[in-house]
Image (cartoon, rainbow, N blue to C red):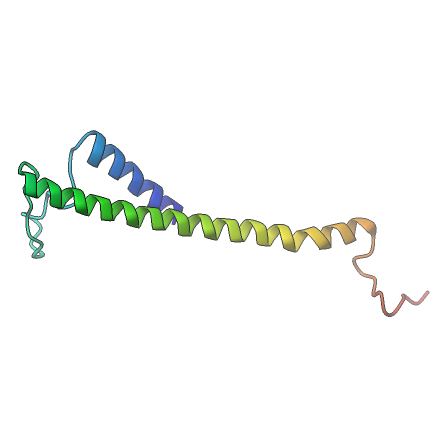
Length: 104
């Protein structure tokens, strides 16, 4: 998820905004899927392309936030799972049962 979101940010910021090579709807006149073409050289066309670029950025933000949440949950879960057991192992108590002492 992080890769999708960050890749989308690179595309959206670098290609859409800074270099202005393309927008979300600039190639819809040749796609044959039925999406209306909005010419980026007109004000109304540029407004519609900018709107769809903004929606693309919202999707990128959501992908990054979901990716960060997944990463955070995995990192904190591993820390919580390993914290108690590692300390007991280092103290030599990993195989001891506190209720039933070991028979000698």
